[in-house]
Length: 297
Image 1 (cartoon, rainbow, N blue to C red):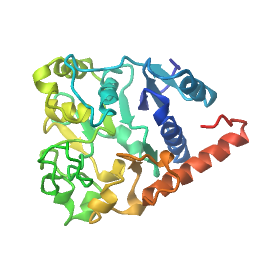
Image 2 (cartoon, helix red, strand yellow):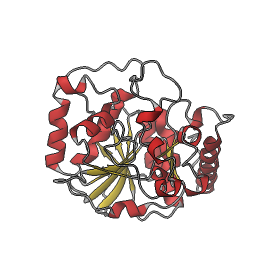
Image 3 (tube, rainbow, N blue to C red):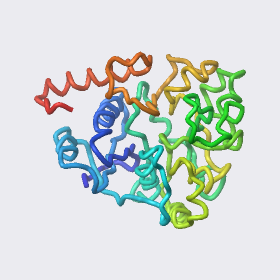
Image 4 (tube, rainbow, N blue to C red):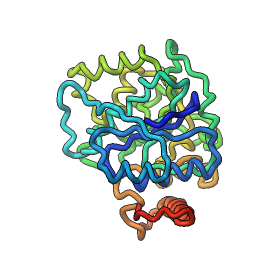
């Protein structure tokens, strides 16, 4: 654990080195946009030694957390990444901080979004945490996704006629399926909230129905009690083509590279937003080489 002298922090989960290139780009992007707050890597015992070495070499703060899983096994053979996702609920337990914003490691920040640290939350009321909507359009037509994941049930579809408003706020948290995306969570840590989360994790009748792990649990446990953020804070790369009515390249603050392949898996990808990732990562690698860091990550 690295000592952090800040009451407000960004966190990201790292369980293995598969996401390490993404994490390093995320850390670099936060620093590049001048964020006042540090990023802490929440790692589990599954992280390989070379992952620890890469973080230490770059002086990126770390904190060990327990690997979270439901008490009853939930089968994610179609999306094995979801086994790791339960641990993204751990920021709710970090009561040593006033504010924690959990970010997925497959993101890059393009504009400063420190204002999220000041959003008013009310853990007893209807502002338990803040997040953007999940896109439930299922644009890749994955057969194992729920049948009600269709465009007419998507919060973003409801904003097509008000693109300017969509830049400022999300659709109401109760609209459509009312599911948040777990990629960015603005959290006021609380033992009480964390105890509620653990109670749900230990309720097989609930977790067996959670097709999307952490975000399913949060959306169910705190239904209608989360603050909907504009998509610009968690701009899923798929929104650019399945919700082009609201997408604005120049306004995006944080890109989320959902689904596969990840940008670092294929430099030749035709996906437009992947070019943004490579611009960011090339700048990171060049700057690291200037200070003698050249470990291949």
